[in-house]
Amino acid sequence: MSVIVVTGAAGLIGSETCRRFHKENFHIVGIDNDMRARFFGAEASTSASRQALEKNLKNYRHYDADIRDAGAIEKIFKQYGGEIKAVVHTAAQPSHDWAAREPHTDFGVNAVGTLNLLEATRQFCPESAFVFTSTNKVYGDTPNRLPLVKQEKRWEIDLSHAYKEGIDETMSIDQTKHSLFGASKVAADVLVQEYGRYFGMRTVCFRGGCLTGPGHAGTELHGFLAYLMKCTVTGKPYRVFGYEGKQVRDNIHSHDLVEAFWQFVLAPRSGEVYNMGGSRHSNCSMLEAIDLCQQISGRKLDWKYVEDNRIGDHIWWISDVRKFQTHYPQWKYRYDLMGILKEIHAACVEQ
Image (tube, rainbow, N blue to C red; front, side):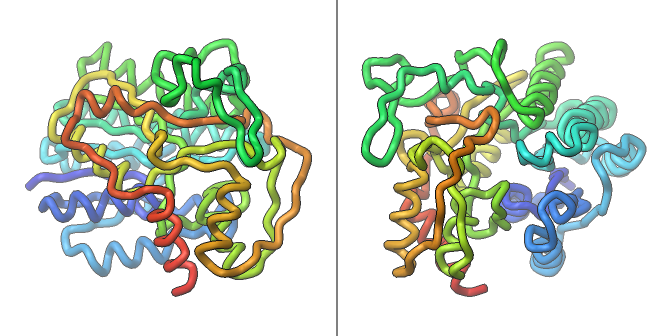
């Protein structure tokens, strides 16, 4: 029996991972205790997603465990041992703002939880691939020092710069303001790399930008495109924070990210790091995203601007994914920005 352990199994990326690997006849061990509902309230709960996994995937088994509990994690890993072929770690506290309110909880989930999973993997299934969903926030606000040009509806990098195609993995993660969330993810990211380099384990950090899709339980503090479309469809007011609404993000569909996971698991490497997002293929500013949501939905968004950019927030982020594409040339995007937004819109209308 081939087993994959998926943390945050009922979340956007976790549930996509469960479905993708289930198609490949893996037995899925899902770990998720719905802390998202605690972070962001009942509307962000992943309980419905968990129920769907249990109903639709015959080889899915759920564990309502907390990744901060080393004993609980060890018990699960010990049960399956060498049958575990891959660990995909997507569980996280994902919000800048929330981290500042409860630093111990944020660090416990993001850093200590990751350490518990790495050590359980090393003890019970050291040959398995270990995939970690890191974040571009490990670079702190260093991207804001790039030569940026203000355009009508977006910020854009000076196209003579080396990062004109996107920011690659050579950018320093040092001497920068991360936010406490970014700092806890840095700790986890470096741990994942070190278990690869020091112990020779098959580990990878995917430093994602905006991860999205129709299964995203978006809220104001997390889930940019999903929450924006939700507000446009329902008439709920939306707030744009800072940078004149011209801040740029690249957006990657959960399907495309998980397909990258699959390619890595097929041919794992040790201690790798990849920037992974929509790249030049799929990106937009806040103002551009508002225009697209209104265009697709046929409705006008009720929004206001707040002159208060969030601490450590990026003015411009586009990922350079060419390193991953070089290592895994079979990987291709399925979704562009319009494809992503149309799927999210359809999901909002169905709710």
